Image (tube, rainbow, N blue to C red; front, side):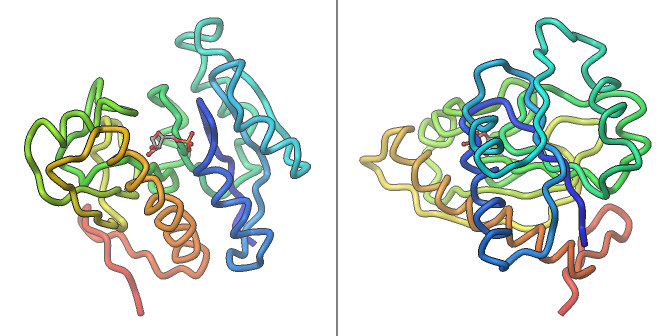
Length: 203
Ligand code: GRF
């Protein structure tokens, strides 16, 4: 059974999509830990309601010790780390020890509208501003960069002329809630192959 730690910073709706997939038996995996870098993340409540072990390591308090602190909790206890709306950047040993075993969901079609400072509503504001007609979300492996690791899967949405950033954000979030559990299911079934930084999804 795939054991995962889910890292969050906010409402945790992506975490909820994983919880729902596990509870409905669509996804064979164990959410061993939910860890937040912010004190008031509603996702912690979602985890507690489902009996999942939680930790809060406030990034303002832990600062550069955050990544090593998270590693000390999860090392040798989980197979994969899932970043689900996690706004801190993981650094140091955790990236080495979990190389090829950390995934993130980003609310755009990487490599568009991503990288430093591109998170939350800012992503959708940039998409609207640029006039793209299609946006969406990306699940990707995490490397030492920001939103730069090999892409596992993407889901698209149309962008309409009348869209506000909030309207687009809502449309993309629906697809995120499908994309993340789908990617985890593929991983749990060993159907995700990484060759020379490119992902092959096995049938
Ligand atoms: C999502 O849009 C995700 O793509 C981005 O941050 C948002 C988090 O939402 N990384 P939630 O906390 O999962 O509801």
